Each structure stands twice: as structure tokens, then as C-alpha cells.
Amino acid sequence: MNVKIFLLLLVCFGYCMINISNVSAEGDTLNDLRNLNLEAGVTYPEVDDIKQDVLIMLYTTERKNLPQDMEIFASETKIFLVKFNEIYLAYKRGDLNAKEQAIRDCANLRAMIPKNPKYIEEIDAVESANNLINKFIYDDALFFENLGNNENVTKKKISYYKNATYAYSLCGEVVLSTSLKVSTDETEKRYNKDMTKANELVKNGLSELNLINITNVADMSMSEKIDAIVKFGSAEKKFSDASAIYKSHNEDELTNECKEKTDEIDKIMPILQHDAFGFLFLISLAFFLVVTYLFLRITEWKKAMYDVSLGDEILGKV
Image 1 (spheres, one colour):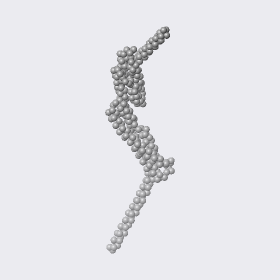
Image 2 (image 1 turned 90 degrees about the vertical axis):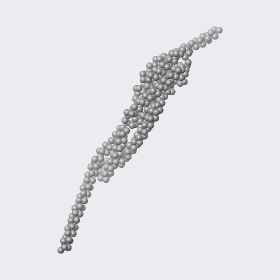
Image 3 (image 1 turned 120 degrees about the horizontal axis):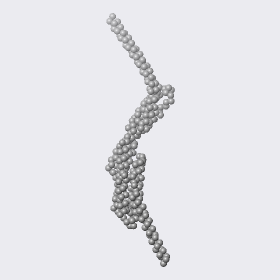
Image 4 (image 1 turned 135 degrees about the vertical axis):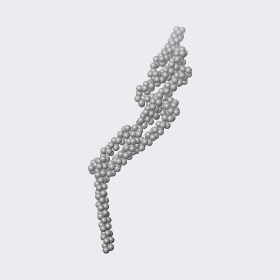
């Protein structure tokens, strides 16, 4: 008999402890939600809407009759809100890489939205959670699109537009995503074509420079100097054309590399041209003298022939 009473008391005690534990857990979840003060709520009112929906559900349900699935939903909601706030703060305080990462993190956050809502407050909370994610990603997309609109470096512009396109697609803005993707693809295609052309010009220019072996200008023959002038001129034209293409896309580093090459050519070209032009001047002068000499000789010969002809004519009359 005493054993039965003892067992009954033990069961009652265990039941009471379980209830106390449940009430404590329920109270912890409720208090945690109630005490959440998230900075993201200042920008996104959906944060407080979600929080209030779940709190109303908990307040209007008797603690002792609180279903387990409702308890789980409330706990998952708290985790979702805390995680969203972390993403928001990383986006707000971080650099461009953090803002780009926020797009992916927020998209992945959809998986943390509580599943299978049963009660009206849960349904409202889930709807607000999806709206919250869409709104945040949309704002991120708009940020990158505006960044691209104001960017002069084509490579960066394309990167920003790609982020915006991806973000628009994630938040359901299909028209904006498609439109921006079309223009981005066109820009990227033109950029790749231009860069391929410019890189080929630089490659050919370097090849021509590598064919010129200049250690001492004074030791070069005149034919070598003239050949070097031709190759330098051709290489300089290629570097200048490539530089213009790079500059059109604001590729400053590549533009400067081309300028360094043209500067190198400009340093040695005057020396080669001076020697070559001096040589050509002498050749031209010699040619002029020869032509002048021949002209004078021909003139004298014509005069002599005229005199002979005139003399023959006079003698014939006599």
C-alpha cells in the first residue's frame, strides 16, 4: 500500500515538474520575443509586424494549453528575426563585398521561415517574413543598380549590374531582372570584344618591340636604324590604339602600361630619326647634286648642238 502511494506521488511530482518546465520554456520564448529590440525594425516595419503577430498568438493562448507546434513556430520566428538583423547590420556597416554577400544570405534565409503555419497569426507572420526578405533584397538590388549607373569603370559596372539582376530575380521582380540582364549582357559583350582587340594590339606591339635589339644606337647600321624606326612606329601605333580602347572603359592600369611603352619608344625614336634623317639628307643632297650636274651637262650639250646646227645652216647658205 505504501509502495502504491509512493509511486502515485512520484508520478504526480513528475507531472508537475514537466508542467513547470513547459511553462518556463513557454515563458522564456515569450519573454525573448517581447524583449527583442532589433535595429532592422527601424528600417523595416515588417520586423515588428512579425514579432507582434507571434506575441498576440502567444498572449491569446492559455499557457497550459499551448500546442507544441505553436511553441516551435514561436522559437523559429525568434531565430529568423535575429538572423535577419545580423544580415541587416552586416549590410549596413560592411563594404561592397558584405552587401553582395547579404543578397545570398537573405535569399538563404527563406529556408528559415517557419513552415506549415496553422493559425491566422502564423500565416500573417509568414507573409510578413516573405515580404521582409523581398523588400530587403529589392533594396539591395536597387543599391547595386544605382551603383552601376554611376560607375565609369565598365568592368565594375558589369559586376554591379549582375548583382542587381540576380537580386531582382530573387525578390520576384522578373521584368526588372530581365531588362537589366539584357542591357548588361550587351555591355559585357561589347566590353569583352574591345578588350580582346586591345589585348591583341598590345601583344603584337610587344612582339614588334622584341624583334628590335638595341643595345647601342651608335653601333647600329643605317639599315638597322631605319628598320627600327619602322617597327617602333608600328608598335607605337598599336599601343596608342590599345590605350584608347582601355581608356574608353576606364581601365587606368592597362592604359598606363601602354603609356609606359609609348614613352619608352618616344625616348629613343628622336635619336634614330636624327641619324636616319641626317643620312637621308645626305643621300638627297647627293642626288640633287647629281641631278643638277646632269641638268647642266644636258643644257650645255643642247646649247652646243644648237650652235653646231646654226653653224651648219650658215655654211649651207654660203
